[in-house]
Length: 277
Ligand code: NDP
Image (cartoon, rainbow, N blue to C red; front, side):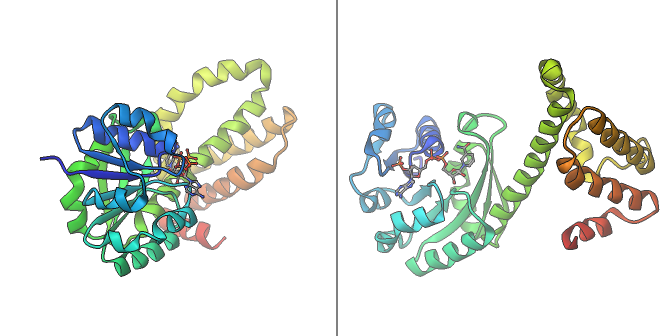
């Protein structure tokens, strides 16, 4: 039979998680500070627990998705003894340090602890393309990978509990770098061409995404050619009257990195230089 699952936290994400467990046939118990947020889930077969303790004791697998780690400790702190012998899966976004601290705290309660990073927005949960990264003890992951697979592709990235968060934040860094680049691109073309550029963006970003891990450097697009393109972007931005701050911090370091690459330095060594500045 399908593992009973408890979901603590019914924000935009927690609601999507609980709905996906229900849809996959898992008996699902939910709890949220604002009780009314459970109404739709209850209408679809979820059991609403009156207290966090009742919610935890309903299932061997407890998934928590709250605003942040201080909230998690506030919500679970009083219910620690009920966690003994269960698997606690924390999908709250935080830092690797917070994940490791929480793993230590969870070990003290006698729970198995997996930390997770959700690489999806709520409507994607349970759909193709949804990915959730997990870190922590492999046996706990293997035991529950079936249930966790209801949320999307479940990938174990290592036993260090901080790794899912580290990978999550690193992937978000790449995404926000892209968002920042797009905001500069839109500023460059100005409102008159914003719609036309917006129409071109998704397929362009998808087509170039595979090049990102090598900073676009290969035989077809040599680094010195790219360095010229970046110089042209800088000049065009000035011509268009766009403030160069973002370029200065994003593209100039990339241009220097590509220049060093053209001069024969290895990409790994250059990424090391990004680390130290
Ligand atoms: P919401 O703001 O929609 O929900 C926040 C949740 O935290 C609610 O359940 C809320 O309860 C609870 N909460 C906040 N403060 C307290 C408190 N003091 N005491 C008790 N409960 C509290 O956020 P999301 O659901 O969107 O996000 C939850 C986590 O999921 C975050 O860590 C986020 O980074 C992560 N995530 C979200 C994504 C998204 O696109 N939404 C994508 C990937 C990850 P109440 O309903 O009572 O306010």
